[in-house]
Length: 171
Ligand code: NI
Image (cartoon, rainbow, N blue to C red):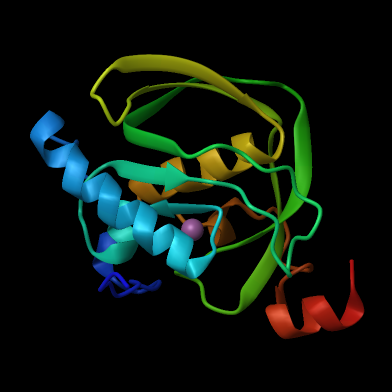
């Protein structure tokens, strides 16, 4: 078990840009903690500020869950200092939730494809294109590093629901 506390909206760490990760030495313990926390939470993505680490890093690993039984899975992706270089014109709408916005889900429109430059866990400079659900998670996590949560990406609050009601009514 990893020891971590999830920061939730209202915490200043989630409302401000996260400073860059300084270098390789910092990445190893940080990615380790983030990955352990993500797996313990059974989440799809987690940004460092969400566990109280104020740096620009995030981990993503999409797995099917009770809430999202049909989403496509991804390998473990570790992003340090990610920058979105390009996004597709095609916009897709899908449900999102966030550990820092406990209990709520809403429909968020996002580009279907993004190209991102980042440092990986070995501190290689990488540019990679993500498509579909994982591209959504990447954007959600990069938003966290800019002090934004999914609520501010919703174009209407009409879909906002509790997880409980989401499960009850189905999709
Ligand atoms: Ni989130």
